[in-house]
Image (cartoon, rainbow, N blue to C red; front, top):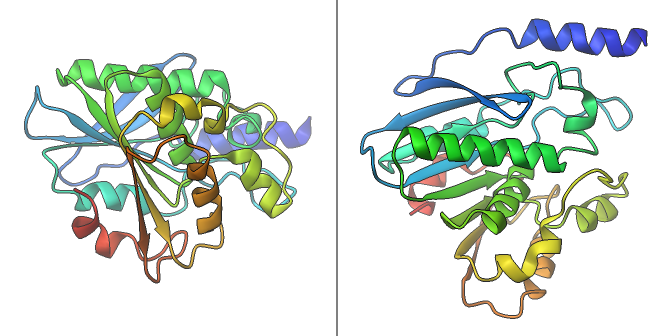
Length: 254
């Protein structure tokens, strides 16, 4: 009980405010029982959005201890969004990152990181963004665990015209098994929606030196599709899980 109180205290204290990001508007979205942080750079309202979905952030301190605050420890995804020249770019955090809510607890950034209520909150946030900017459609760019979120949203949202993953987790059961980690027992898995996903245009960027989500995991997932018609995979030389993306991003994304 003392440990749980400490987690809540640290989390509430560290996430009290949102910083400014140059060229982007700061947004706070109430989605389900969660508060979501977002930053948006919109130059053509009424046109499609490109929404960057954050990864799992700082979910764990070590293999046994969940973090008190899942806010990312680096700006990789935000920097990808900043370097993107697309007219309408949004960075969307995951629930419990940057902003606290009474609902937040370690379950939601550990085994329940893709829980139905988490995905529902992200879906609500995407719908709010599309409504706010009068966007007819959107594409999602998900990094690491954000790739799973992007895939799960694409499977349920007809107005998502494309999803992109960067070092993305597409089958978390295979991923946790590969690393010998505890299964994400409370989470939805994109692998269960492959019949829908294979019909959606998608691009998967794979780091040639990524040891966290190695190429064989992505390749094995995509082999389960009955067609590769809508799939493109791009191996990025020298990229690891969190290095080698930002400097190359403007020439990679299109």
